[in-house]
Image (tube, rainbow, N blue to C red; front, side):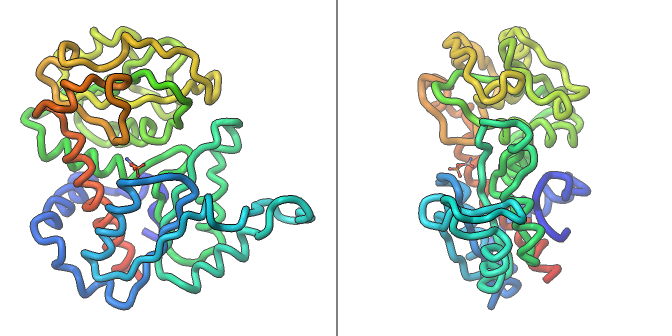
Length: 312
Ligand code: CP
């Protein structure tokens, strides 16, 4: 594995999940592996969990960590070649990536979708440019179209709490006042495709995810029907894909409630808007797995960093 840009890097999900579960038992056991190595985390967007859990993972592995809020503190980057840079962008990604690579051994990058233009977002400009020019391993900390570290943490969480041979897992859209990217939902769908589960996506008309990503998956526009008999309900808002990046419906009836959840476990990547996406009672109940998911972010990151360090 040269980089960790997407879930395609995971050859055998069961072995990755069991390795991560083993790491949790003794998080410092590979502390010597990262001694003398530096992880640099570049944030073009806000974060709580990704920022702190990835740092914690690196500390478990004995690495030093540098963090930069690139979006608010770095120079505005130019990505096109041959541009006459006489406008607002002060630095080309070619120099920026190679300079940063001189200061660290692995670089993590968070760069969200702009949600203005689908093709631009799908090009994954920032992640791709760093992978091309840095010459060191790049880790995706959530890009335009994917959040693989989150999906890996979610797979670990499901494995730890599943009691059935083939659980029913539902990904449900929920309302939100702002347009949100598709990255978390995309990666969760891709992760479900790697597992032997009964998987259903439910969302209102007009919110179907990218057809290439949801190919082969049942999409049910009746939320109650989709959630019948569910073991896990993963809730997330995303903006429209067909009417790209738009909020076309904020139907409050799609908020997840205890009544809808039944006996299922509730999952969400966080941050979550209480009483908009999900009611208080769900998050406050023992059926909620959101804290377990957040905890597993450390071990998904640690597993990825460990595998990259082993190849340096
Ligand atoms: N789930 C997640 O990625 O959280 P942050 O945006 O706070 O990092």
